[in-house]
Image 1 (cartoon, one colour):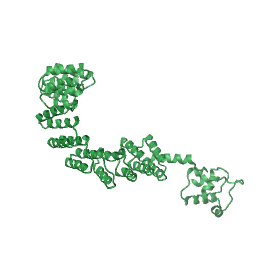
Image 2 (cartoon, rainbow, N blue to C red):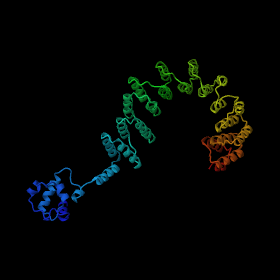
Image 3 (cartoon, helix red, strand yellow):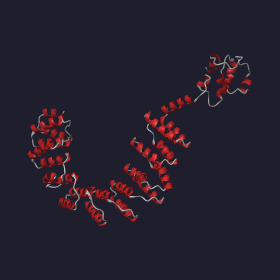
Length: 444
């Protein structure tokens, strides 16, 4: 087939004479014997033997001739760009990775970044290898802030960094002796947020070895990570290490550890740290007191919770709506606390109202719950799905199907629907005959 094309498909004349009349030996040895040059020059009226000889030269050559070369057309930048684009579409990540790596090796990092932007436009998500290549290229050009910004962009797109991503940034920081907090915090904090506490601690150790002193935020991030994994003893040791390094913990750092103790139901440990903090001159804030009050309420130590609340007020620390919600959800005097909110210039929100309505329903004070629900609307606080379902369930348990049906209709008109707990009560009432099947139509 190829030989027939060489013979039967004339292109541009080879020479002014128009005919190739050399022997096979001359065909192979002449200065113009390169098949590519011959194809570019054109072949007209070529003889069969000469075509076979040219074909044999071609098949032993590498690379083999392309269709364009067969037609006597040379490649240019435009055609090569098309080929690269086709490969990018067919073998996407592999091809892009190769091109980006080549650009970075040549120091053309800005072009590599532009190519990544083009990848995203083509809906090809860059992988970790591409990210690491770009970060390394940017750091080699001392463009560390751009590297950090790139990491943030890639994390937002679902590409999770590893230690190789941050390595070039840390190396460049150490060479510069950088003290800019934004870069240092990003390294440790990113690992902690991704749940990679081991990598965060390794990075911390490397910073110490290289003479970079972590600051309060760096230690706070590590303590937070340890608390999230319930490694409270290690978190407390990290706090002591922080102090021994001459880095004084602030209220933010203490709050992290106190909250960690309270969530682990070790509220007494949290209280000891609270007293220790006060001796060091660190003043507790609303978050500190709220964490401890919640811890004591959840541990059933309501008296201690109320005493701590009184101490909070006497120390001039203003309770916020979160503090009141914690107390109202835990103590018997919730109604008195709720009524005192306007006097303290604290405006209750939808969750506060819902807590109060739920508490009144549990006590069987349905009339008070209804009045509070009405007052909620008068105060401009729109009930959410939790508020509606709390009230509906209470009426269902009390057998007041008419009021329940009315509330369900009102709830639906507000764009909410029955939750799983409400549906379960309905199904239970259907199964034991306390409710007719027609009631189900209200839930649809």
